[in-house]
Length: 248
Length: 299
Image (cartoon, rainbow over the protein chains, first blue to last red):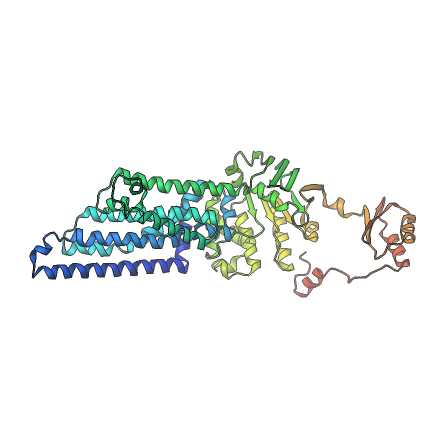
């Protein structure tokens, strides 16, 4: 299984797409960070004339939190591009047959490929780590936010990857998988935006409500359970799809 | 080594294979022969574990293919019709990956051994994407033998290869069988079967037509003739040849003779007299090609 994951990770790095995603991700997060710092600096500068305006201003709430919030949107955008090829390429290149006729279980194939993609996501996120960590030189932001923020990004990304992998296995077509995955992920993200009742069903299924709690540094069992169930469901669906190949 | 009993597979309403039963002994090379769409690939995919069967049983090394697929897959090497290759990898990296997921005992050595055996040494560090079709096919075979399987299932191993490469593949398959590997290979190239297989299973539209040693099939037990317009006079003349037991006009100019002994010489004489003889060059085109490209005598 680890060999499948390892091959997957290496394969992402050997394609132009992998590097494109990496570059794009770093570029956009960097730009968001620069804008964030700029806004924060302006606010602080404004405080010179009116100290009451910036009474509640702090680096955790006004710089780090918005940064992670922006990152969730970027993760949402780039992960479907990673997941779209996971199985469609295996089907197109006839390499799925190699995996299916090797002495590994279907579960190991699915998990291996998923872990490979998550590994790449982890690399992506690690590459941005210098940004929030640099803050610790000049201030003392809440470390809970740092940990929660990265956990949220990793879980959100993994969830989208699992969903995308599933669509990739079902459609066998990269473009269709990309479109469907991105639309679904976006829909699940924005569905709760106009919802005011925190106990409503919409709020419970929406990805963003669970992500926001985590970013604030509040790691709750319900949020973790949500993502575990989300990922588990799509891994299982992918597994069933692969099993069906034997019976067609 | 391989036992297949009453194996059937249907795709929706379409029947791919129907109640196939055959056995293959250890160290045998068996050729699956049949036109395209006869069910050769389906049977092989079922044996390799890529496909389930609708009914019937298949055992490899005494282990049921459907009940313990993992154990069976560990001892089967399979080359599908289109070699499954991760083209963004180098040959060596790809084979290393295969050795690991197929559970080869000493992966590093297994990789080098299969590279050596299939003749991939000079391209071992090149990307598969940059290789010619012949080399890709070889990588496909290397992938199938990397974990030293007891059974090798090769679906059209020589397709897309030039005659010299075909000869090499034949040699390799023969060597493997000498080392007690059981081989099933499919092809629709008849000379290939003659050259390497001990037995053939002829399959057509999902049904086995004949299972027999190659020698018994190639020695003359009948003669078939292509005649433009078989006249009754010709048929009578053929029937009169000593040794011919039956003359059958199959229509479309196809005449088949059943005979008790080799009657080709007499039949040829009758054909010449009837003005029906056609002549071709001595030796096949394959022989000529091999001679010109310097691989003579390897076949």
